[in-house]
Length: 172
Image 1 (cartoon, rainbow, N blue to C red):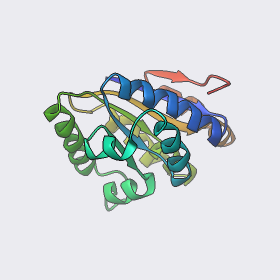
Image 2: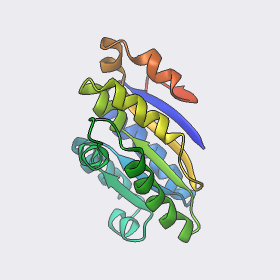
Image 3: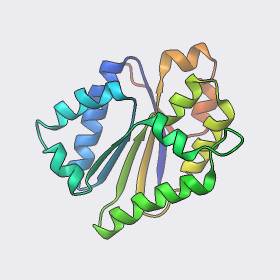
């Protein structure tokens, strides 16, 4: 499995980068899971709809959009960390769907950025380490972080160390 990080400069550039990445994965037949804040969904799905019927892709299990705050609430443990068992169950459920359809899964996740923005470094590290336990069928996880925010918090080097590769192209 490929676990990487993408640092983005702005929300509009993130939408454009996600569109290209998700489109490419959908064309390859992968199941695509985007975990991002609500402001990304509408512009991303508008662009995807130019080539795919997003509603149909969702119904067929080819595309899912998840809000990070809702997923974090679902995965919390009593100590405000990430419950490894709950995370594993969530990911195994998605992987089972994809395997049943004979597909790989590509995930783009802004959930670590959401935790980091809230100053939850421990939960961010736990989550990043849990991605490494992804079951068979998950071919890639790209974690999404706002470049300006991680620089201000001096977290960029730590985040880079938690990933196999990092992409921070100036044009996203």
